[in-house]
Length: 104
Image (cartoon, rainbow, N blue to C red):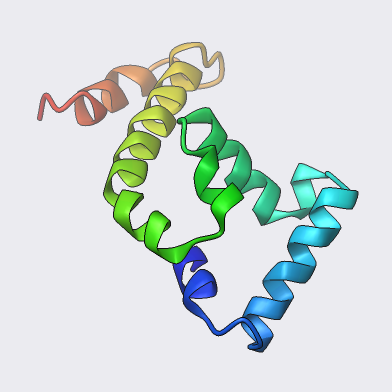
């Protein structure tokens, strides 16, 4: 969706709405209510913060596979770590670890 927004004409409703959300997100930096802030945080975590700073569809598309791969890896590891320390479902981690670690 983000690439679609960036590829849209600057005067389109989609692009204008995105720009308005970015402006509001910069003023009211509340992660819970802004997918822009959430995406920016994720990209910053994996070392691709320049994607949000540039707002360039070509830059996003050229790095899309690497971003997806890194996010899948990091989010998968975070999920495994949460499962590892889970007190409510202690048998969950051994089931998941085989799937994410590529052992199946």
